[in-house]
Image 1 (cartoon, rainbow, N blue to C red):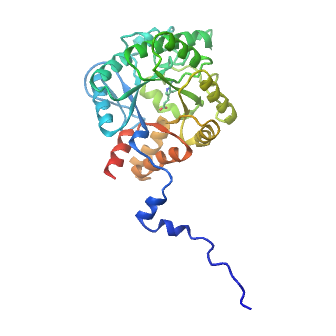
Image 2 (image 1 turned 90 degrees about the horizontal axis):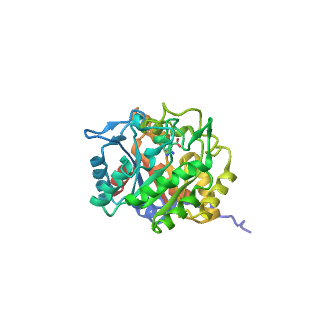
Image 3 (image 1 turned 135 degrees about the vertical axis):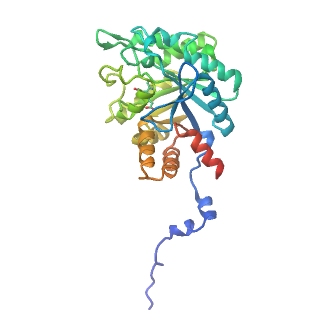
Length: 333
Ligand code: PBG
């Protein structure tokens, strides 16, 4: 009696990998330009772009150059641009008043983009660090980052940005209660349709180092941000922070940094089923670009793979300094 054997091998996943056509058919995740938000650095004055040494390929632009970047992004199909200011040290104070000056660099840039590239969504950063003489995201009193007085400042900053025409407010400060306060002020101020993308799960990370160079905050920061940003060891706490921000009125939530926290992204999407974004931060960019420029990795390939990993983990979109390069690559096919 012939023995009946199971066929060998039991399965052949390679069958579905054998040609570009079959690989295309079995692709589970797509990446497109519409998944991207491009963070850009804006500075006062005219003249050429300034290099950010710790982020090779990333520059600080004058306001007209940011408008050009917005036009480039729109042309590439990138739906949103996110503005970060490089602030003149002379404008940094203890009360951070420049943050809600209607004529500050960011607010003037928002108006310029809205006038010339109306279709792109403009996202802002809400936190006091670029304007704070201490480099902290909130007001420092007696050596402490004080929560509730900081929230009052952040609300003023939010309203100034909304008045200037911001579409997406991005609170990155991690003070408690700020989303509810901002949402209430936006509603009361006639800005019901201004959205909030909360930096809800923002970790106290060493990956922000190059960004602090880019915005000129590294020299200014006294101490660290561990009294308000989340301990990298804590996943459940991050989920609770996301839930809290949603309950207070956030429309979208962000996990930051990105690749070291893909598990958190996965949990947010799976457990809460909300619009979920990641920030591939400056240190992640610097690591990829630094290795690529040394010839140690294929930069474009690692860039595309890193972006795909965010989509696979559950992101609806990603803030990435690579955004225009990724969009151009996708267009080239
Ligand atoms: C500041 C802010 C930071 C980033 C975005 N907003 C730095 C920080 O929290 O110190 C980091 C972005 C990056 O590293 O690319 N509120």
